[in-house]
Image (tube, rainbow, N blue to C red; front, top):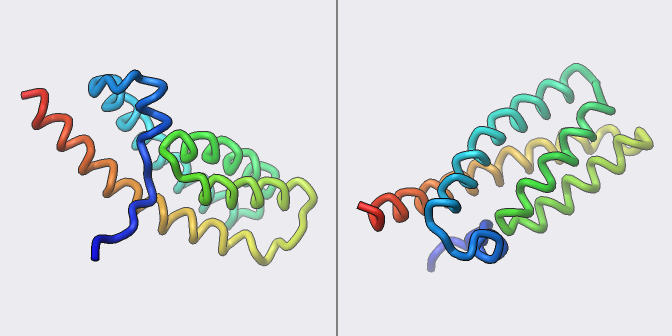
Length: 122
């Protein structure tokens, strides 16, 4: 049985009109953001900078939802809302770990999409 994909390019295809070159650019930009998100979320959490953690979760939410990761987007929104009220601080770590795990899987899936685009445009 094939693993369940966590990414979907449906929204992106709508935005780009299915243009593979534009899709490729979006994915490459997203990969650059992933580094910022992973580093930032981990850093803000460890330094107890909860306001910044919430702001970065908000920024990451928009990006992951572009790639069809709506569940992860909703979890990031929950984290953002919790940080605004400093609620359930013990749960922040779980949100960050979930993000790291899912974003790694998403990166693998999107790398395969990039490779496919590059093969088709040769």
